[in-house]
Picture 1: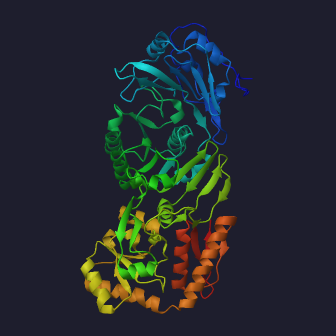
Picture 2: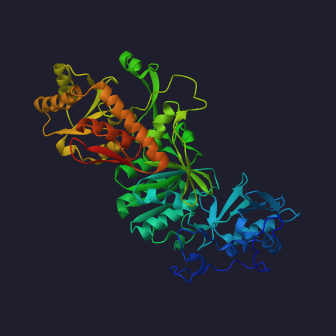
Picture 3: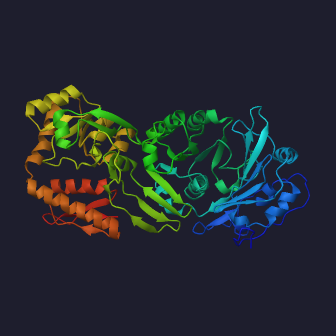
Length: 548
């Protein structure tokens, strides 16, 4: 029993003040290697705690030996104050005597050199020692943080990261973001065979020393000379080492956010963490909001504001998000998963709490909240509804919003006027309910990334001429004219109800038979909910089945 009343194993410590032992050489983990006999379904901890405790004075080692090792978070040494051991539930003094400068200097000498971010480490381990300095630059306090490789923490998001999605982890300090990053890097490198590069600014992910800790598996690690250079090393990794995955901890300023967007736009999967406890915090953070698409205030025309049912000045998402999904670490044992960042941000900006799938550490879904009005909407102009959520080409919802990609906007607008179509052009693809593109550019990665998030259909023309654009729009809008409003409304409601059932029950749902154009609209509803839809059967009984 530990002295704080929590059961745990005691440490077998040395009583002398000798320098810490050299860290053991780590070999490739095998089934006989104890804690590194990895079973990804079981949480296993490895921490080399002995090497961290050996840096302490002998009297403090004996005090730490009586504490529950598994729960120890950090040891704090401040000159003139009693030393403390900290746990998730609180702190405990290790001695009634205050820490002297001689004791502090001895620990500093045992640890080694501190870098520009006032951090040091112990070679071959994941422990972190952080220094506090006075105005003259002298060290007057130390925080000795226990670093652990906790295997099995990735299960709640394993399917997501293995799918190739870029994922952003959010959570308070100490909740396990870096631990999960480390495990993600190992899974993608060793199980998926991907080229993974870790940007390790403070050596927290891969450990101290030139040889990275075996907890990151086959992932490679780039160290950062100074925290101010993190964004430059991120870009260097992409340009020099051809990674398929970049892993980065603590994206904290505009330069790093911009580097993250550059990496994502080059088709590299990005797994990172950022400051903030929730998606809502990130959206209102002017420095980091770009990670989830950013926010801009726009002034609508009278017709547009009337159609939306909002004031003329509204907030909208500015661009596609850098990260496809956002994971909020609510605790060490539970996460809240937003699989579609664009949709979640759009919901927030129109005053609706985004749906988030709450998942336990064993991978089981606890709950999936339905979108509902936010409890306390911010004062000011009413937010805009999420344009990306509009079904493609749905009648009676105002003008069809068309985005021309690699085409002349003048040509498109001239055709719209000549045919007197109920349509208008928009400036960004994420605003569109229909995209018209040149065939040679329809597979551009940026366009595909936007369309995957919005679900808008894309139609192509071979050449940028008014004749070809005219023939295309005549064909598309003739389909619209052939649909009865009641039929469309009923079919869309069927698809909405089916999507909710699939999300709730996790089972496929079949819809009644409909014509091809109506099935296309129903398919767009399924896409908005991140569900899979397929057409089955033969006409006239061909119908849609929506799968989880």
